[in-house]
Image 1 (cartoon, rainbow, N blue to C red):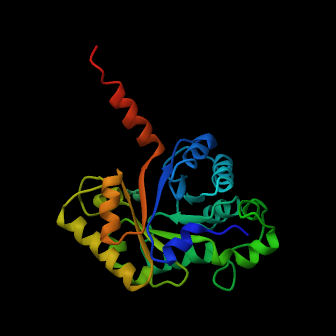
Image 2: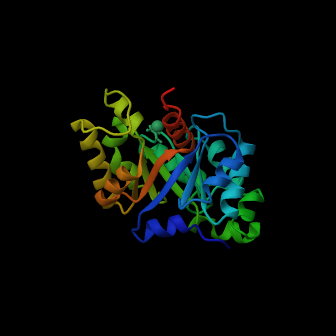
Image 3: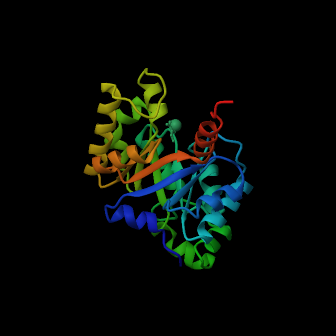
Length: 254
Ligand code: 3PY
Ligand code: MG
């Protein structure tokens, strides 16, 4: 059975780098899987990505030896089941604000006895280069479970959330977190409320032996976050890379 190399890295305390696949076509995920990113998150929360396209993305990314993750639209059994059963190696769940919500994530993502995930499907096993029997036996040790911390409530409840058994990592959504703190949405700021929230999440994650992650806009910021102790860094997205370069090249005076 193929290993989830990103989960292994995080458990060893090492940093990992990824990006977001927001353009709903498997070729985009396939192209990005040719880069040095460790993982690619297929974005189902804020895009027109369908589950069929997501499944094709998971298959291509896994076939190219990288780790396919999925950000689901909302914390629900149905969403988590469908992305894992169609071959994602892990799930990133937005807006996890309470211990009960974190417990629900684990229940949906882990098979019994750690959780209550329903048995079924074939693509999950195929992406891990195995058969369903081995997948069902070993998936709990491979699937990466990530809860997003992106509200003031989540910061307040950080210890209750991150002490839930079965969570591998937390991931800060800086835009939603800024908004929740009454600030304009953005990826970075030195506003004390944001800085203190980020520091608290990092501290509580370390205390609970949970890896911490955050979304940033460029490699330079990623480096700073890694130096700070973050282990799961998302740099930009396919669309941001495309538009950033296209906009720059279109500026030629004429
Ligand atoms: C946010 O910034 O809110 C995010 O969800 C980034 O992934
Ligand atoms: Mg968000």
